[in-house]
Length: 277
Length: 343
Image (cartoon, rainbow over all chains, first blue to last red; front, side, top):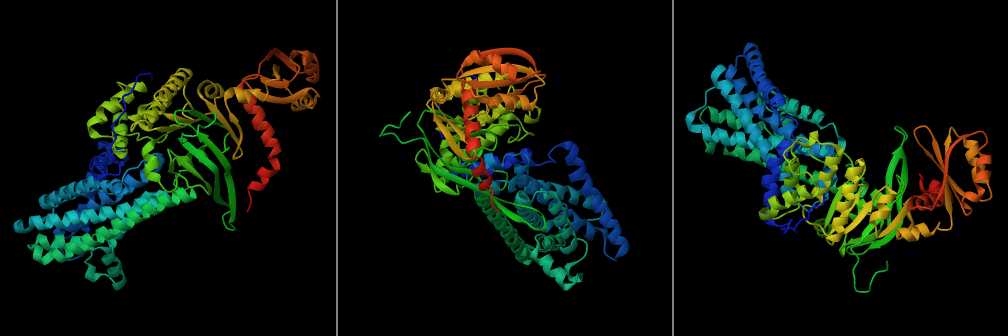
């Protein structure tokens, strides 16, 4: 440990260029560093095997118990499984900083916190899309799902926005987990809530009023409805409002999540929480 | 070391206080206020290697955490390179490197290289120089060739060296080393000391906390001894040793010494202090007196039937001075410490 080290030219860590690099490269790197499932032995059973069985289970149960087609349940669950990566992944991507003991080192850097936080969304939105596209493939091949060719792009946009908003609620759960730990317990609750309140297997209109209110406040509900309508040929003019509302809800969750993150960071300095003591 | 008129200190702490709020009980929660740091003041000059010594819970890490902006002081002020640690956090963070000891604090599932690349981004290291900088630092800490291995397979020493490389990524002006040699083997610890010396030679200001007295004695320009949240001594290693310069240390190796026998030694009129260290099969009694070996026979007589091994006399070391300072201030502050934890 004796070699000489040349001085380094530092960029401005608070500058735009650095912020973009933290957002883009930092965000992509966070996937391998913090996502517990980012290894084939866990990824395949959890994000490929689990969704496959979920699709077949609800398609079989739903078509047996109701007069709706298996494709109806397949579409709902093919979109819902994207939340698996978004909610759990984003929860881990934030809460695991505390688990690894890296949080003090992160908080001691001058990095742009918005870029640091927002960058974490990137890989999990991509991952959610991938899982959902796989599930749609299963639905098309085995469960009779048919998508109107002219509305594929609209359905894709609705799916992207839905995955983002699910990742945003995962970010909120991640920020909560920084303080309360046991974040995966909360992530499981969110997954169940999405399954129950958001029209995945039971249309929102068939739910009691109070459940509809909750469904409308959660991410996913409007995005899924947009995907369902696009699948049967609705254009952007028809579902643009739903997609916009889903995006708005996603952004709202993301802003609240970031607000909580910064509040907790300030609180950690004040009250010696988050293991910075 | 006094501060020249025209030089701004690299680190300046003025009456720093930090109180932690906690509670006892589950149903009837009773709030507690624990004063971890009770008015710490010191200055570190640019290019100086300053040691902060103290027992566990003395307030060393809390003091460092305030200086690196991770904790807000309850009272007092601190500045690093002229920037206030409360109001100018970004400016302070740009200029400091923080290295803490232990196994945690790294991303285990990715390589050492990815750990460094990630933090290079967070510190805004110029992308054009990032690769070279990381390679240089890997060379500096002896991890060249191991950089593509996952950190989860690293030994404690390798992790520690990676911590150091990470803390230096952005070429900080001030480096805080919080017990960096903890858990390192003797060879690793010696290499680390060379690295720390190299940092000072390169013009860095270093604040080091350590439990190893010989390390502090060998490295530090000045040392502050902190006990129970207060600085109880500040000076060069020679200054601190000077406090007990007129004493001789008699080391008595014993086997199964009874506490009463140790108390008899302490009560002897010529004995200033007695500290006992447990070894594998024996206990080493370190007896401080002004009379050296002249009173050895009497000391051995006070130990009664205790089986005695080697007996040697030597000059006091920094460790003896440290133990004396901690013991004397703990006795003096015993009542005050009890009062510091209040509901």
